[in-house]
Length: 332
Ligand code: NAD
Ligand code: TDX
Image 1: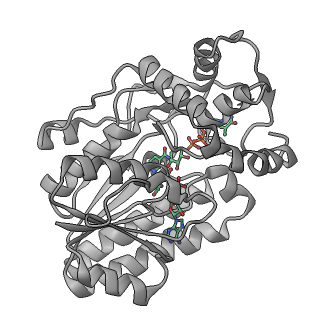
Image 2: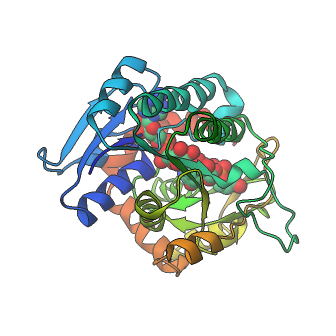
Image 3: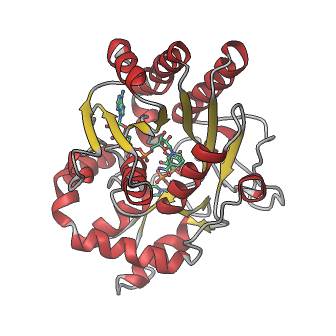
């Protein structure tokens, strides 16, 4: 197999590249990534050029995407503008990359008859009440809240339309919140641990009662590889590892695991339109494709992740100041 991984220099994409590189030694991986503020070439160090090619380029570049798709067997499409807070400040790049970028890839796989796996998020379903006994399933109606999640929902619907209208061979997965190494310091867990490492206090939006359903990024990778190899074209699979936690508890746990007073955090401005709760029911993926998560102990996985940020300060320091300057303007 020769695969293209779009967005492979970002957090989840680079973790997938390392996972596939290890698990499928006879595959060739081409990463297509524009190296935006979120992409980092250092995430892909140490890979043998005989098995790995890096192409710096934009997924909206139709000629480039067409050439790469023609030369490969499948596309695993991670590239996106991925941060809700950024989408509330400046939505335009989200439309360009998430909508037009996905359209560009769809046209190329349609023309060349190649397989696509599209990476999406549980946020397309909107949010749940804290006491709702239901979780999201593949049949939950789309109801996105933010410009980010609306563009991801739009991209999913484009994929579905290209499957139905043009017979494109594509699968979709919607995953819950990932944690692990190489996540940008703008995101919740890396921001808090790097604030502590900088000698400052973590920052909780609003009351912190919001719930996210955490999954280790390596479990996301194993699920995507399972779907790529065994998934049925036209189908959507939800990926989750039963990891519901409220933000306040996660901040307290990060403080505890880093040897701090668990109450030593600040309440900052809430996110406008802040989704209350995400929760994934991944029964379909587990029963139909036999997938199981490996990292089921959140505290243990979090500890390893916090240690990674402590041991890799040169990786995140260059991004930290600009990120905090942006948050400060927003009172966050
Ligand atoms: P990220 O922001 O860390 O990485 C995105 C990558 O895409 C970067 O390397 C960036 O350079 C690249 N990119 C952005 N625009 C591009 C363009 N126009 N052309 C080419 N490359 C471009 O994001 P992430 O957190 O790793 O998320 C990856 C995917 O997973 C996204 O599709 C996101 O919606 C989805 N997802 C994320 C989570 C999560 O918890 N982070 C959960 C579910 C789904
Ligand atoms: O400093 C913070 N304090 C805080 O309380 C930050 C950055 C966030 N938060 C809260 C907001 C959310 O309730 O923590 C929670 C998680 O925030 P993010 O890391 O921004 O993630 P979220 O908005 O839940 O979206 C993530 O999961 C779904 C990814 O960024 C998306 O790409 C993915 O689709």
